[in-house]
Length: 85
Image 1 (tube, rainbow, N blue to C red):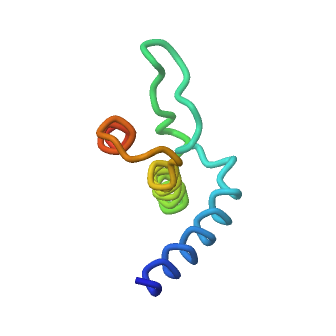
Image 2: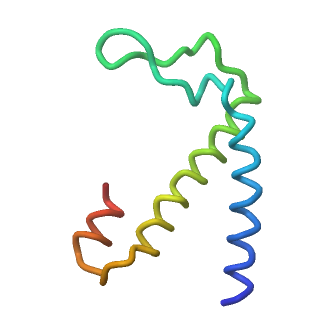
C-alpha cells in the first residue's frame, strides 16, 4: 500500500509541474462562440494532446483526493454522488 501511495504522490508532483506549463495549450482554453462555443481545431497540434491529457488526469485526481479527504463522515452524497458530478 505504501508503494502505491508513493507512486501516486510522485505522479501527482509530475502532473502538477506539467500542468503549470499548459497555459498556452489551445486544448485547455475555453471554447468561444455561440451555442457554448466550439473547439479551435485550427489551433491544435499533436504535441498539445499529451500535456492536455496529463492536465485532465491531474485535475480528476485532485477532485478525487478532495472527496477522499473530506472531513465529514462518508455518505452517499459526499462520496458516490460527488464522484459522479
